[in-house]
Image (cartoon, rainbow, N blue to C red; front, side):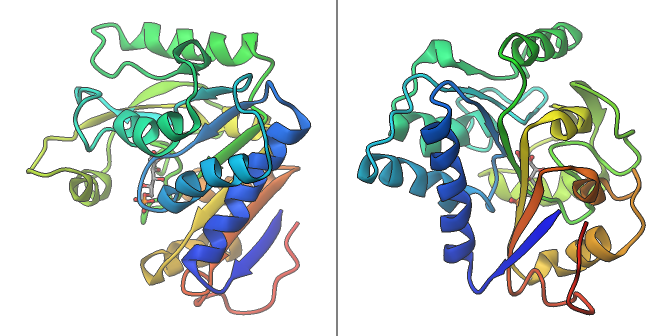
Length: 247
Ligand code: F6R
């Protein structure tokens, strides 16, 4: 796994955005997955500008969602879908038939998982996945304890996720379950990037990089990926104890 520590959030975001544009440059019909949330906000916003500047055509590529809050409708500003549409799909003018998202309002979530897994398989796997990390180490909604070898599934959200998640919503919202790609999807992606910024992520980044690898710390899986990369800012990297040779 490669680790890049950028000075600022802006530089971290730019580096990640360049990765997105490059993947489409090299493979116009790439399948891409980007997390929602505060971390990837600027990355997403930068992609459309970069694509335009470098004349990169996104019309042939595909997107899948990483996760969604169960029971939260897509028009709710706190939903992952709302985030992706606003910050990524609309600016890039991605056609609807090139987007496959979890329907977290479905009364058959098992079916949602099966359809997502099939979509990814039918499109030959994910070319680039960009994830954030929760303060408890989760990736997507793969909470601590979720086995590394799962595909899409529905999870009970941790208390931390339920309370931290309130920041995305205008009013107090009941968040109990999530639907998410599994860590096996991340492992099978041709390129996996974890981005993290800010002092609030410093402990979890140290744990993920210096602690034991295992489901207790989902983000540690990044060290097992053969084309894994962490792009973090200085604050997120501020609790690392030494310079790392990370494999
Ligand atoms: C959201 C997601 C979550 C977030 C994580 C960090 O789609 O997958 O795992 O990446 O909770 O959230 P932020 O970026 O808001 O700190």
